[in-house]
Amino acid sequence: MPASKPPRLWPSADLDAAIERVTPDVLSLLANGVSRPEAAIVTALAGRHPKDDIRCTVMRLDVLGQLVEKGGRYTLPAAEAEPS
Image (cartoon, rainbow, N blue to C red; front, top):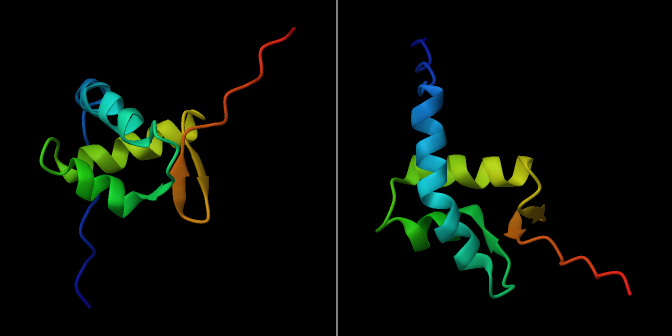
């Protein structure tokens, strides 16, 4: 049985820079309120960013709570009502 391929490791600064570049486009894509699966986000942004960068960005934004995943689809979190 062949050995599995080792995971791709990025230096932390390179990963942070990639996520910083891609984040505005992911958030802009989801700003209209339409939920999308990760594959649709990757497809929509593939002409502007490497697919791995998009996937890492979606994962990071989800972990940080800047995206909400439900049923395999991502949206922006609901805006909190301002106190009166």
